[in-house]
Image (cartoon, rainbow, N blue to C red):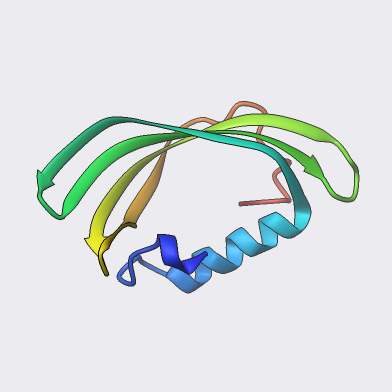
Length: 103
């Protein structure tokens, strides 16, 4: 999981732990993403809006949820690959997971 993040990503270890906890709660049955609004302020940086569409199944309740999450993402070319340098949620989720089961 760490390889998609730039080593300078704020709290990269905490972010990875959050993702691991979420994957333990949910079975991701479908994940799609769209990238739009790409701009490149420099040859080694890019900004884009990333829209994730997901269908999850809670592993304990077997409840299926569909939701969309939108982020503004800053990418940087690091170690020869494009990696996530920063991201911020910009749009509401549709049918997000229950509040006690945070991402």
